[in-house]
Every structure is written in structure tokens, then in C-alpha cells.
Length: 263
Image (cartoon, rainbow, N blue to C red; front, side, top):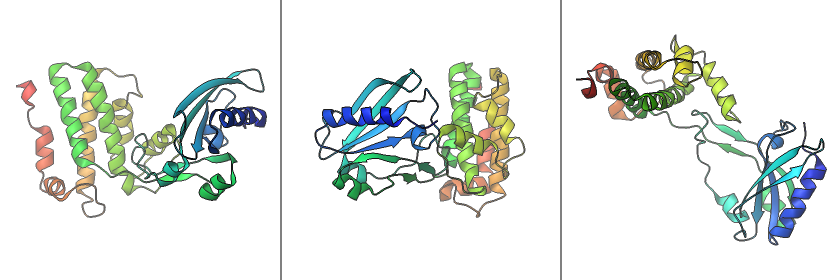
């Protein structure tokens, strides 16, 4: 369902009154992608000539069907928006992100700076083998100390780092939303045998008790390290020291060694 032009016009009018130096109104999120549902939030970037009067605003509009719609506005200068360095999206599981935006209104200056399409492509994340191993050791510590909260939090992060490590061995895909990133990661063709099953458990997507989470984490780490060792040289997924530790078996010895908390 597309966003009503009447609602969008009201938002633009309110922002023009609130920000006299407004240069552009950019529609973001699901409505910019043409995927907005009747109750979807309306995400807006307001770009101004110089610092905005307020960096954040929020209010409610009435939609075509009489429903209340949450309007969320972020504001910054046109110059800052244009010069901002693109960073990897933290929710993207290592995938590059296609950040779709739509120019809803602009002055001549705003259009000259932004062009007709202000959308951005955020880069893929760097695979982090060392962090992957560190989160597994947190899982082991949590298991040894019966820390249920730490166990679930660390296991979730472990699975997310696993997805980032496996991404380079699969087709390059641009994602747009967290759920899209998750679906792509869980459908990897090049992955350890039990990756999807163990990742779903570690991420909390399957109703599972803590002992099963710990077991899934253990197998996820063992199979992922084996998968990566067999492909050393195919991708840069670690610094030289960690790659050497993977090559000679030191990493696998480390993750399987007795944990101090269990002694």
C-alpha cells in the first residue's frame, strides 16, 4: 500500500513551517520501498541549510482509512547528509545494504545536491573470526556459571558473526531490512551442514532450553572453523595471526580447552 499523497503533503507542510531553512524532505523505510502497510511508521529525513532547529521530531497523522500513523523525523544539514561516510549497517549480518530513499520534496538547492534518487548503498561488513571465537568463549563461561542471560545473548551474537563469516562464500546479495538479511543468511548454500539449525537455536528463533543452546553453539563453532580452515586463502576473513591459528589447529584447541570457570 502506497503512502497517501495527502498525508505526505501534510507532513511536508508541517516541516516547512517548523524548519524555515528546509531544503529537502526524504522518505525512508518501508514507504520509500513501496512496501508500507496501512499502519507502517512513516520515516522521514528533513534536510536543512545549516543546522536544523531540532534533530528529532515525532507526531501522529490520520491515514486514508482513519488509522493513526506514527511519523518519525530525523533532521540534519544538507551538507552533513551529503558528506557523511557510509558505514556498515549493524543489523545486516555482514551483508551490503541497499538503503532506499525517495525525494518527497526539495528546493532547487536540495535537488541539485541530492539528485532525483538519494538512496545509498552501505558496504558489506568485514568478517570477524576473532570476535566469533570470543563470543563462543562467553557462551562457555555462561554455561559453566549457569548465567542464562549471558548464554542467550552471547549465542545470538555468535550466530550473527557466523553469518558474517560465511557471507563471502555465497552469492553477493544486497539486503534492505533486518528480516531480509536473516532470511538470506539462513538460506546459505555454502555453509556447514547444521548451520541453519544451530543458528536458529542460537538466535532464539526456536523455543529451546539453555543446554540445547550451548550444544548448538558448540557445534556451530566446530563446524564453522572446519569450514573456514578448508577454504583458507579463498577469502580474507581474519588477520594474519588468527588465520595462522586456524591453519595449525590452535583455534580449535582453544575453543575446546577446559574453561577456567568450569574448573
